[in-house]
Image (spheres, rainbow, N blue to C red):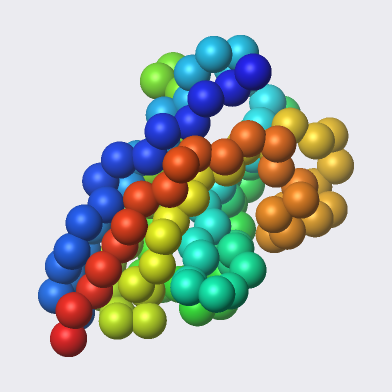
Length: 127
């Protein structure tokens, strides 16, 4: 079992910045994909960004956040971060941290790839 807990959510004006953290505890692993999804009311969860470590490392971003969001990982702390800059009102959503441990990278942008989820944290961007 793995537990994930997000922190750093809150409210900011448009153009502002926030930094989310996701700490994994329990049965942690050296090889993983840890990423972020967001969910708008009445919608499916959508991919935001992921940091994958399996031998080497890689990062992937949704087109909507490229150039504005940066994902990083501190493996020693079992924590991933999402630096969000130039926030827009369209970024308002509940953000979820997720972890998967599949050997293949195919499907990395799909929620079903991930086995563990945090409870979510609200991000509100005001105009």
